Amino acid sequence: MLSLTTALRRLLHAVLPVECAACGAALTDDPVPFFCRICWATIKPLAGPACPHCGLPFASDVALTYSPDHRCLSCRQDPPAFTRAWTCHTYEPPLQNAIHLFKYRGKIALAKTLGMLLRNAWHRPAEADILMPVPLHPSRLREREYNQSLLLADQLNRDLCMPLIYDNLVRLRATPPQTELSRSERLANLRRCFAVRRPSDVAGKRVLLVDDVMTTGTTVNECSKALRKAGAADVYVVTLARTV
Image (cartoon, rainbow, N blue to C red; front, top):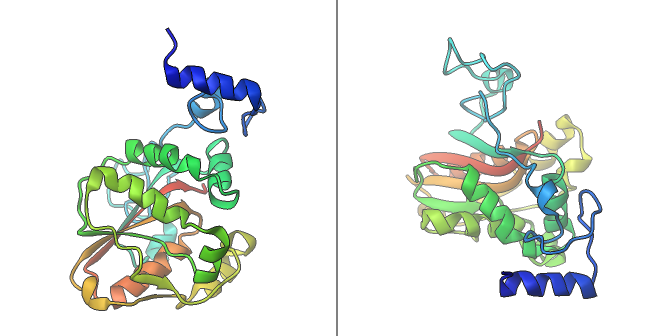
């Protein structure tokens, strides 16, 4: 017997047809907004060995067999400011489509679903004292009307239940999107771009920083530098997806 929610969803899709954003199939009673069950089921958490510092997946399954603390080349040459970073999924379709809709097309109905992916994939003890999202510049926030990283942090905090502080770490300059830049341009684009308004609130604290996508790690690293400068004892990073 159909539940009332399923019946209403089928009726709504019959009146206002919606296609899956990944494969184009017509949606019926699919529970995830804008995606069919089949496509959504292909999203799997990252598994296998990864750099114990930045979380970059290693190509070989035996990468850490004989040296569990082996770091990737980037972390050995230029260690990031954060203590450790984890990422939950690969940034590829259909998750890539979902994040794009969520981040750039105003589909905030996906916040709960994407937050659930993050919560289900990231099983870690609460090693932090406070939770912080990567901030947007005020001009970008006015344009978008929401911070997608804050919405994800709020969903993650349903499990963690720790202080969520969203107005202390701030972005000082409006910069071009990182996705439009080369690696060297990304580094220069965000240098000294973040600051902490109230250093006393983070001094001696362990901070868990949340973002949607990690590409080169420049954004979370610059945020971590600002938090470290303000006196944070540790900065941990968790992202929903990562470009691999």
